[in-house]
Length: 115
Figure (cartoon, rainbow, N blue to C red):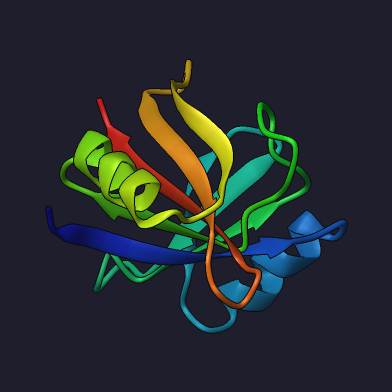
């Protein structure tokens, strides 16, 4: 299993203001589902920030997202380690398979793979 990208998720009630702020640093909008918007660097597309109002299908808003090449393997590793699974492995309508796990610091990590 390998990591493709890691993205901080910023919980925000000021989405457009956040978009404008991070735009000053060179980030551009690359995805917007209404409840989550992802900004990326045009020169380094895996340098990203996501701004979220809430999570559409999960009970909590994750603190970060980690995209891996094999989300099923990542899920198995986390379950075997005894880590707290906050949101079960499932396919989402927007084209990802994901689960949430809590890290030792209490942060919620959205682990995903694109289908």
